[in-house]
Length: 634
Image 1 (cartoon, rainbow, N blue to C red):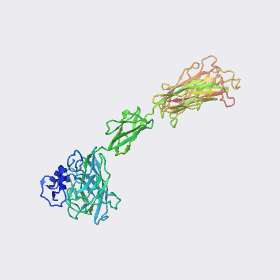
Image 2 (cartoon, rainbow, N blue to C red):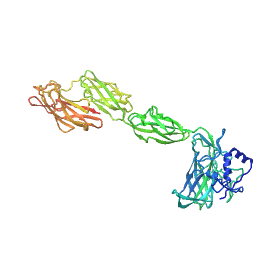
Image 3 (cartoon, rainbow, N blue to C red):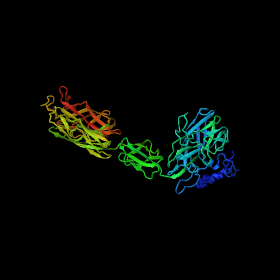
Image 4 (cartoon, rainbow, N blue to C red):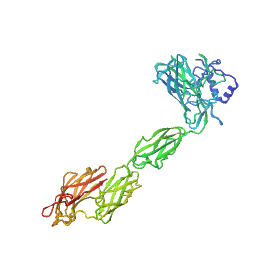
């Protein structure tokens, strides 16, 4: 294809060339060259009317390879990888034909009609084009050279040339398929989809786009017909207008298209992007989010690093963070070293997510972070009031860590009959607010402080302690006269817990209960203690501990069942309350829970070996009660 050069001495042309001397020289030198893309070989003068196929402009064009068979559009950057044209001016924008150092050009939404759907024997091909301004502080505005059509504002895109392509079937040295660019094997013409800034720009097919984008001569003063001459040559081009593009921003997609002969399967279009560069503030957006833990709630004081920012942002008391940043892709990373102790074993989603920030918009990136459950201690005292003398030693304390749905923790008490204490370690902090209640109160006793019967606490923190005290008021009652067998757990310590079994014959008064014998002495004991509860399976061993009067009991049976027996060496036996058995249980690893006793198989005898008749209260001849025990195992 012969390149032709036409220098016209019009005043307007001269003014443009003087205003953009560097660009004009490049165009002029290229136009007077020869040989396709060869900018060095001389070329003979050309007659007016030939298209402006200036090599330097060809090299500054984005190449769109369109393949109807694969329904794809491949975009390749210009051969000139840097900005063409004059440099920036002191008081205004710089003249530019843009290349990949300034913009990215993307194509999408390819469509090809059936033959003849719009024009006889023609296929209408169109696709969407979007332009991304890669400069962080320079906007793209209406070009001065090439001159923009009247009424068009912003970045201009026009199809500088088109050629039919053919795949040879061969493979090049780099392994790529060879593509031959033919001068003409079927016609390819820009369609009315090149409609400037007309609307509608992308109607549903087969509706036509709004009017605009009629051929315009971007390089000299010659006018253009509304329709290019059929089969002729022209330096007039249809065009698409994208409006000004702020620094770092992307344009809206606009549709462009071509009408092609039905014989064309592949073609190449060279598209020129023209705009001036105008300094301006880079557009910004916002990245915001929250850091929370299912175990601990909002995570305050945690640093979040956002790529491009010199310093991280820090979450507030609600676990929220926010930062204003430039638009484009960003990475949001939680700095794990700033997380609270015990946090960070897992992130949902994974730490270091990528987000895209748009101008004036807010993008949200939240993280849910797994933490160990923080714990503290809840303790207090339970004091008896009133005229009653009932023992408080059998009370169970129940703690709900967040006054909600969390699992409860139970613990026993220690102390004297009228004043006991409790302490529960490893209580989950939860929301820091909890509730404490008392269970297994003695008969005719009730909680009178707090008045509601439920104690509460607030502000429990990791490693902290909250104290909740109770007053239990008991009325005087005369309990049924009966022997008592009392089970009581001590404190869990060093992986063990002691169970003390006490027998008290003094509570069986024959004056008040005819089933109580006058002789209260006892010398031999025996029974079976079975353990149950959520932590019973953690008991791995047992050993008898010595008592004052009955020595160390003999133990048997298979855990969690223990058979025990003991004998006193005291002459005449015992006649008052005595510890008859102490069993030290070994606690293995496992989940926190509780253990409760169940006593059966009671068999007592006096010094002479005569059995002592023990009948549970409530049955005929009743003279015996058993008080069981419960302990919390952390």
